[in-house]
Length: 123
Length: 360
Length: 135
Image (tube, rainbow over the protein chains, first blue to last red):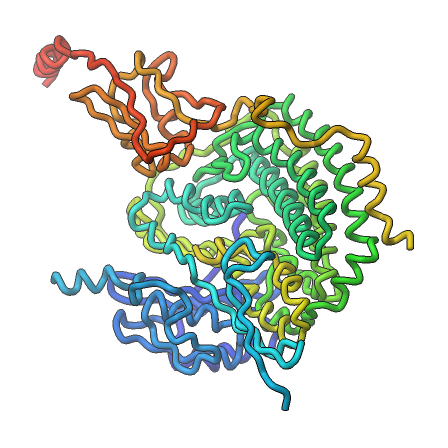
């Protein structure tokens, strides 16, 4: 048995105004996930209340992407946003607890977004 | 204004088997603020999906963590089976429930031992691990491994258990439960344990919701949230209620785990009684995964999320894991603010930190 | 006061029992039928088909069909038993799971088994001849 899930695509500017009502109605932040596709990055913001799964999706360009931080609403988002900054190189603006790229102690910058850059150079 | 001191806690500390670092800002003996620091051993396992076929990723998922390895595997195959529309045979589903509840018993017994060790109760630590050894023997008998089980595959399970062995396991479980009852009695009633943990590391229900606490940490704060209630896998045939404590301190977290072990014993018996006789243990897997799914399963430590996205090839496009400890770091920061320096190890242990999960 | 003595019942009762631990090197370890210790090759049965090396998720197995050698890197092997499942030799498989763990090694090196290369001389000549009339 599987729960049904739908993914609602919203614009980057709408993120904060969509998230704030969820905070007021007592949803918890389940996770923030970034996915690299060949031509774009996809951000998933998942929330949950009483086992009802809500997912907001934002599409971002591959390089030089930036996002508003939701740590002003959900403080718990700081771990996910630092992770996404370190692994995908997305600039998160206004993170309440910003590690400045030192959340993961890795040698490379944005390793999860790297393969695409190589392909672009070759082409 | 009193002087502020910053004391580094970890990455090497007697109560921590794994590296997590906390910068504790102190005013006298009180912690004002704690800044967490993970990422010492980041492994980048999520990128391995570009090199390994999706069937082999089960092996990677099971090796993310050493304690809840089987439930990691179930989380991954659940997502893949959803996007490939595979109907898992009923016997395989019940075997998965059986093993995942058995691993909850073994993980909670491990935690109870470690927590007793963390507060200096050595004999209780030894006895908890003695009982855990009996559970590990059942695992070795049925799957062949003591820590890494390798029993799950996409479409079913790799190992089957015959009827005589199941009957013997039921008898063995009665013995384990009797031994466990003596230890649980100490955790529930002993004065020293209640004195050490009561009122330490408070987290209210509202904070648990807004900071996204999961698992026993959330349930100890009165939040009735157990991902098994979404009835994934074979759990639609198992009756259960989330176990909730309302105090929200370290003692409540221990009590939730103590009671969850009894619940798991009950669920193991349900799974064995509802297991159909004979029948297939694996479904045929054809084609490659296409689509995406957030698979949510309940680990001993809380809710784990597997995001799988397939693009019609044998390699997955994205494989992401959100482990329970990663979600429990913000509540940990909240609990540490305002506590005594001497309580920090007890509070860090109370969320059952598994850093190797977090550094996947 | 009685609250503090809760643990005493368990502690005192364990005084009368034998130690729970086994004296390992002096008494043999307890194994079950399924226990995954290490992979063992029966060199006399191996046909050097290298299916095990292809199936291995970590690349621990190397097969040389010309020289007739079958090597396994014990440090890479994760005991998933995919190679044993994949082995096509019938009726008894050439690969088997042994309960005992692999012995400790001082150096990180491949463990090598020499396999006799069986010359499939008559078969390649016969196979094309059989397939041409079918076409």
